[in-house]
Amino acid sequence: MGPAAIPWPGAGDLGGTVILVEGESDRLAVEALARRRGVDLPRTGVEVVVLGGAQAIGRHLRGRHERGDRRRLTGLCDAGEEALFRRCLERHGLGPITGRHGLEARGFFCCDRDLEDELIRALGAGRVLDIVADQGDLPRFRTLQHQPQWRERPLEAQLRRFMGSGASRKIRYARLLGEALDPERAPRPLGGVLDAALAPAGAAEKLTSTSRPP
Image (cartoon, rainbow, N blue to C red; front, top):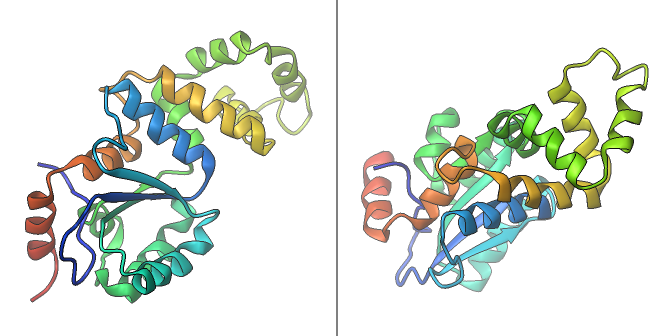
């Protein structure tokens, strides 16, 4: 059995699970993969919460404490925010956490670079390029490819830059790429955080008791 979302310290009635994500595009990708797997997240008691940037995780965790929110917790972040997530989780009672393995043991997953990079690698650049063409965006993408700073870069890097150049485009393609995934071949962080959120509460409690020091 893989990692599971963990109970918040002092949890009584768990009452569901929260998946913390950095931005709206991450939320759409998580929800798209859930639909591809036939999972109704609200029906299963899972809420995807957008932090509005990784720097907000500390404020969110403080707010949980003040509200008495004791739902199980899991999350997804970019590699550049791994240390920040780990420090904040430790500070709010979920530590000590050693490296990425420690985060994953508690249901938190890091993308190697960011979620766009993970999605492009999972689908393959050719499939992603087909999706860009289907959206009528191929001429815009070709314009980027011809820019001197991008002309010699790998196709995967060009696609990542194209999808990240503008909030609306990033959000739109997160949903489209998520919907195109093979449900059983999703990027490891994306599939992992969804699996952790959906794992039985008993598995999470057992994991917590064995992954923390006495």
